Image (cartoon, rainbow, N blue to C red):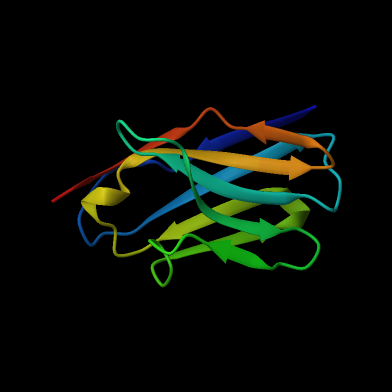
Length: 116
C-alpha cells in the first residue's frame, strides 16, 4: 500500500506562483510514475503533469505547458509542482497520483484558488 500526502495549496492572485508538494510512503518501487491531476469546479478530473521516477521524463497538459514544472526527489519520495503565472482557470482541487505496476494511488487533494 502507498500513502500520498499533499501540501502547498492556497488562495493566490492571478499571476502569482505556488508550489505543491506530495510525499509518498509505503511500498514504492523504482519504476513508478508520479504526477498531478486536478478537478476544476463542476468538471472532471484532468491530467496536469507526470514524471517518471526512473528517467525523469515529464508530460504536461497543454494548458499548463511553459507555466508549470513537475519535479521529483527520489531520495525523499516527493514530487513537486511549481506553478507560475497562475490563472483563475487553474483553480481546482489538485491531487497527487502514484502509478506503479497495476495500481493507482491518490492523495486527499489540496485546494488551489486563483482570484482575478
